[in-house]
Length: 92
Image (cartoon, rainbow, N blue to C red; front, side, top):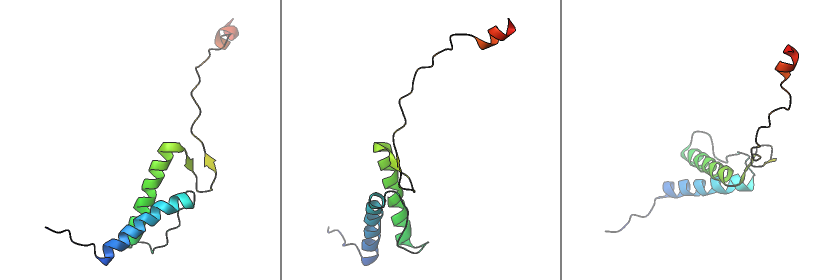
């Protein structure tokens, strides 16, 4: 049994997916698809771009649409109770 070779439409979709993944990193998170809205290539590009966004942001922070780096959130700090109870002080 031989595998059927992909036809031209499938090759275009694979190229659009690869382009979406590359463009996410190349354009630092700015979404500018080169395909007309509503086409199969647009959908493939958008899906792969979003997958790159999900994988990149979970791995090492993210790039915003304004191309500013948003780092990982800071480590949580322990809550320190105030030395004086303000309510008790006002009540007397």
